[in-house]
Image 1 (tube, helix red, strand yellow):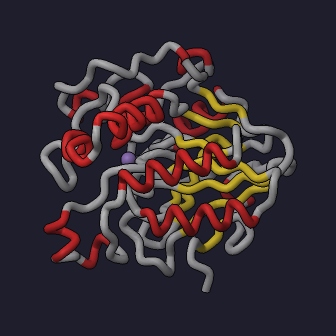
Image 2 (spheres, rainbow, N blue to C red; image 1 turned 135 degrees about the horizontal axis):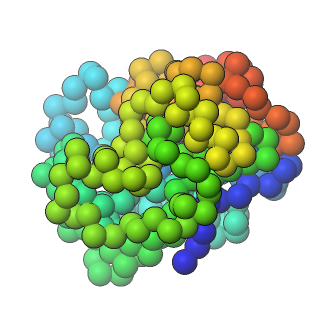
Image 3 (cartoon, rainbow, N blue to C red; image 1 turned 90 degrees about the vertical axis):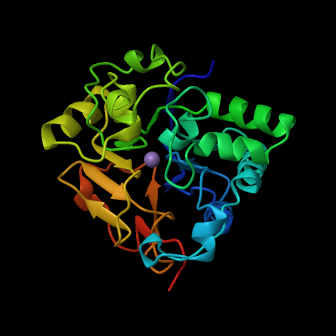
Length: 274
Ligand SMILES: [Mn+2]
């Protein structure tokens, strides 16, 4: 089993994207930014790679879901795996609550009663095996010496030492109610938390030797939100209009001490350039 903590290097560029949810067009945009950033660039997606709108929603698109798109989760998974193969060791996705539903997490039901079952019906046996094998290896957090800590949801989990993440059991929650799952120590808040208090965020990033948490999971209409000194919530794709979709690019050899070190158009970049 791969480590649940991805350790990033102390030089190069790091590109961070959140919540693609089956949006292949946005993945291709992020991929282009990553490839343009050179051979020492790393790409980390913070989870929820899969599960976009059902056909009925796509045909009657509601404004609050941002710029319309069709769910291309199967093709996105293949594109992600192809990019991983093209840039060995430098492309990763963390585990999100939607991904987790394929390897033993509780069912998510935004667009289908059971989104994991709906996606798995669209895949053949080899496709299902590929999906599960990929998700099984998704780390829970990523840490960079530059002070950046990446995770799927808000950093409220009571983490004391990174080794605790290696012991987390991922399987066996299929029948669990989401409200109950959200209270499972570490894993519940890591995948589902929508907010963290300042002292919780501080404790979390310190436990990993970092300074600032970058994550998604929630939709930020403006593309990103600075939620206290150590929390940067970013929306790269899902739920946003193209003009505000934001990804993060950091210099791995710099030091980021708080959210104010993330500047518009420098670290906080538009996915679709103006
Ligand atoms: Mn999520």
